[in-house]
Image 1 (tube, one colour):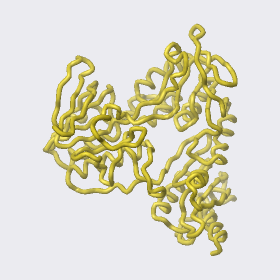
Image 2 (cartoon, rainbow, N blue to C red; image 1 turned 90 degrees about the horizontal axis):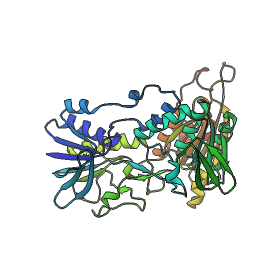
Image 3 (cartoon, rainbow, N blue to C red; image 1 turned 90 degrees about the vertical axis):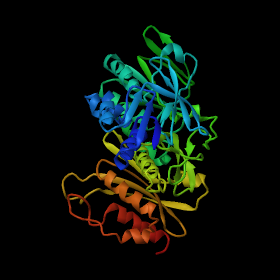
Image 4 (cartoon, rainbow, N blue to C red; image 1 turned 180 degrees about the vertical axis):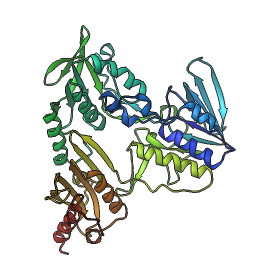
Length: 446
């Protein structure tokens, strides 16, 4: 049997490596448009900030490593067409310009994303950067070293992470955000804490401000918004991504409006023998019961593995996601799982929430810090539906506890009886999450 994999980063190479381990005789061809594979895109902001100083640390495995495993990886090879009926792909060698056709028994689409761009007036002349792949990072790094001021367009995950890292490098950092908050996946009240933290670090945050144009002024760029004009040394646009699936438009694959490929619980697409995984796919959301586009490395690695297991005949199901994420903002960690109350209201769901601020450990033990929690629940049943946590310590472990509780549809009453570990250096005798659960019980009359 032979599988062709399009895309050689997280989902694609996870799928290739797992499939080869399960079936050593399986023939695997991987076509990657770029020159890099199997790397951590999530680490790129930290390379710009010199937190990670060795680029090779971001790369998990090289082409030669996969070759030793018996996997044929073709770099600088772009798949330009897929023919589901003949089970063939058309491939362009970007170095030689030669086009050829390859055949498959199974096809895996793991093509990741393309960065969105504003394309406002003056964009081409100003040479605006994005941060989506390793070559982007390599191009930006010299600007960080030589520059003094930077404008970041967009206040999502990447924009916020880049802002923090560049402020550490001594640059004057502007964030231009069209909406009224940073980190739009969080509730407005929670996201305000991220803005305050960034501003305390010295980041200049411009909310409800729309980029209109760029102009060049020697080696610098003049940024023109609907409210002001200022000059910077370089600009990074970080206004989100879209699935890299344009080349599949005529295949008949079912997709969301943005091009994210719809997959079932086995990561199968709507066409026979074709699978999709990673940031080009849409995932089933276990709470909203709908398909959503949430491109994260955790999902990419997980679905890549599941694709391999299903091709090998193991029939492994992927139940979907609940939307867990975490981000570092200055001294704070922001984490979320499930739905926020703002989302719930938009969806007309009968949910409520409690806010709790408590110490992450026993207050008398040195080093105790405040931990803010917003827990969302269904009014009628007390079933836990979402959590947002902000704090210096104790965030990552507790958000994962909440992800499990929400996935398993625990009620506040059930959650309140969980046997949490306790010792003064790690937690109060009443963990903050249990305090929140008890407040929910009281609010619904239990």
